[in-house]
Amino acid sequence: MAKRIVILGAGESGAGAAVLAQKQGFDTFVSDMSLIKDKYKNMLNERGIQWEEGRHTEELILNADEVIKSPGIPNDAPMILKLKEQGTPIISEIEFAGRYTNAKMICITGSNGKTTTTSLIYHIFKKAGLNVGLAGNIGQSLAYQVAECNYDYYVIELSSFQLDNMYKFHANIAVLMNITPDHLDRYDYKMQNYVDAKFRIIQNQTDNDAFIFWNDDPVIQKELHKYGIHGHYYPFAEKKEEGLAAFVEQNKVYFTKPIEFNMEQEELALTGTHNLFNSMAAGISANIAGIRKECIREALSDFKGVEHRLEKVTRVRGVDYINDSKATNVNSCWYALNSMKTKTVLILGGKDKGNDYNEIADLVKEKCSGLIFLGLHNEKLHDFFDGFGLPIADVQSMKDAVDAAYRMAKKGETVLLSPCCASFDLFKSYEDRGDQFKECVRNL
Image (cartoon, rainbow, N blue to C red; front, side, top):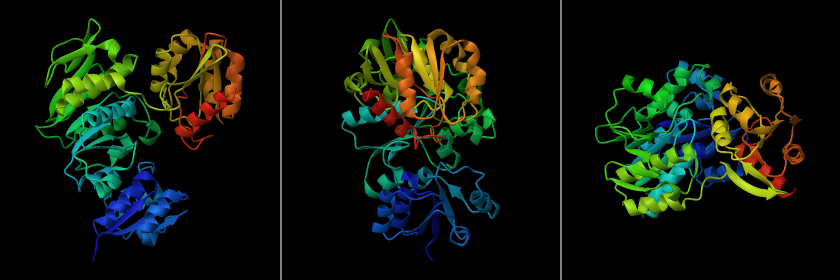
């Protein structure tokens, strides 16, 4: 009898896991509480994989030998609780895919900067001519690529949700950018639970592996001693100190190990302190992988950036419009505001994940000339920001948000969409939110 694998959720990761499970000879079934996109239905139908949508049929799921759970499904969903109760192993798609490849894994996590850093590492590896795939939260699912392609390296962006259900997976190079409160609604509002999830990235490292992290992150520093870490440390920070793998001195970025080299800071394609850290983490990763320093320098200087992350849209009547829709938490918005050079009209709001706006209070007072609350439930925003004395507009659609910003912003100012929140109250995704913003701005 073939082992039965049931996959819950048929998005990118679920459909990819199904393709791989079937290829490996498992009795495979896919179940999604929502409707499945046509793209993924076709993927399943072409291979004769059974699926259901709009429900979870218990007798087709509870008989699984192992369940692969989509990262979007909470750990306390009724079906998950039933599976746990009967002792069925529940794993993530990344955990499953890792069993069927010997490729080297470069894995990136952190509350902020992970998409940019992942994209940047992939860009360097590709430029160096390595046979590399891009997976995790961006690109095609790892499972699909393991089934259909044959890469030597994978560069994988990992969320805390993906890490939650990873047990044996092994990162050859693990990158931890930073840890700030995010998704606390999924972790019983306990920061420690979220921190523990992030540190799972190093759980199976050996003496031959590398752990790259931001040395000045207070949470990382506090936690480091708790985990029996086997890999080599590669910390990075802005100011030079003993043992750093990368730092800045006199406008040069120095990489110290394994191969020493440096480059002018102004040559970096990405600007701002947070992007300096992203570039350092990417440079160290490439250095460890043995990529030539000339290639690393060139790739760090010609990278194009990530869509929906501080993306310049256009200038209308002397006002710049910037799309930072990917800022789904307060810390991301902090980075965005911190990099603004002019007075800014900030558009924020959406589905709040237990946000604490104190983190951006000083920057809002210093940089903002107006606020636009875009969401179905803006009471929390009003409670926090109304006392700041700034003009405020309440809107429930992107067109109204952009029109309000157009009226509010003066020549020489910037309009910044950096919402601090998830998009699901009014939009399909943060990409949909960013695309609508860009379209409305271009229609002004």
